Length: 490
Image 1 (cartoon, one colour):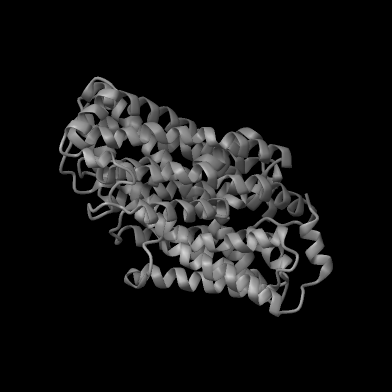
Image 2 (cartoon, one colour):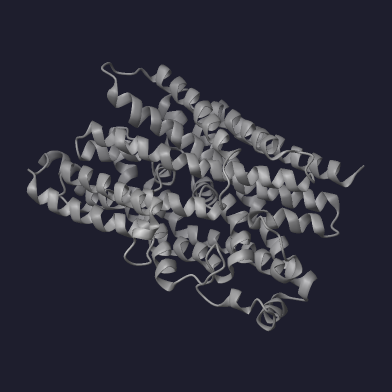
């Protein structure tokens, strides 16, 4: 049997197991919106751990991480830096959200915010913002899947076909099982990619250089020693400034815990204790990034000249004389990274679009069964839109995500105010959110107008906070009963 055929068979088997893992939970959850969106609030610590870990560290980590280490050196440590501190707010926000969700039936982030600030407008704005940032994030996952299958098949599987096959499977199990399909498939995919990452991250430095220490010693003595000097390089090869690096870390850390799909997992937890324990254990998942970055560093001297840095992992696999089964397993691990975030994003985007975007604008209440069906249809529609972007876009995987973080970070001030600042008002929150998004988008499109070399999200957050505070003091207080309901929940 030819090597390429064996690899594709291994990958095909992995995809089949992923499909089964995602479909089986549909037999257990109730056929309600709560069952589809929040899994009947039944996720235990084991499932939550992998949902929280695998739904964030995805193609941008498994493919973009080695790509940044290979092309930008120490700049790749940005990925580890923000994850360490970004999870902390969820320890405080999450249990409060869970208790409110259980008591009042909330299953999305925007439902909380819209209820606290008594604003259907805010619900719709957050729905549009969420879907707008989810589509590039989902596109990122599809690009990763397409890279892997195209490279390992040596061009036999076109990029568009590889992404299409992988995400057809994702759409099928998300359509039928909702969040529990995401949860169980993430557990399988998370364990799989952790094992593959560590195996390859330790194997490559040992095989190519004789060890990890020897690899870095060789880099120091080479013409590429600047790759090890923090904070690393920019995309064009020039030094990345400390202000740009640190502001990118800060914006990503602020946005980390309020990603709508990440925050929504608070509602699916079995208990507040289960959620807090999952958050405490979460940093151990970051260890997964250590071997991922070692893969990229090992390729700098051994595989120079690869133009598409994000494809360096599958490129390395095809250059080494490894058994076809081993290569297939490693490539399946890369697909696991893509799918474990893609399914969570797809599920959340569809749920938010219907519950927070469409439902508030309807004049009549939407019954449970039609609402669930509308969310399922949105899964297919959003998946198709993201796929169309994936097959025509040409941008770095990590750069794509970094741009999205500036927008999602604008949600953090109003989430904080929802729980901890009673004086925050509806118009203060809406103006802060709108101003932050507009400023972030402006500097994202026109970076030459920045006064300082900072991530555009910092400028957006500055305006966001100023407007939130000033407009809140200039407008009447919100209903005391509603404010206290959110502020007093522990």
